[in-house]
Image (cartoon, rainbow, N blue to C red):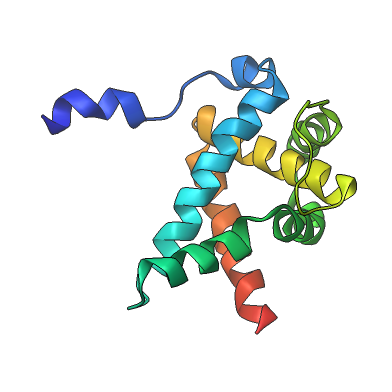
Length: 142
């Protein structure tokens, strides 16, 4: 059974050129899922009830937190990654921010777009570098 499921979850979904050609909101949609899985996998070691786990992951996943990460990671972006981030940040969506400023929401969308691009193009080594850098940032927060 495991052999049958592998193709559904393995990257790359597209070549880098194909990923660059995707609608940035599609990449952000994928990136949101990948980032949420990353967050949840990092907090599972806590021996807490699900409600507390959810609050902890929501704190990291909210637009303002993603926006702050994007700002901290700007110097980490390659030129290509910066271009993908800007495409996501500047994408027009009919969705509005619930509990975030428009600027935070747009930066968060850019961040998710970048994560989605790295994942879907199979650049998992670079994605891991980002996740390690994010963990470093989190450790320095508190």
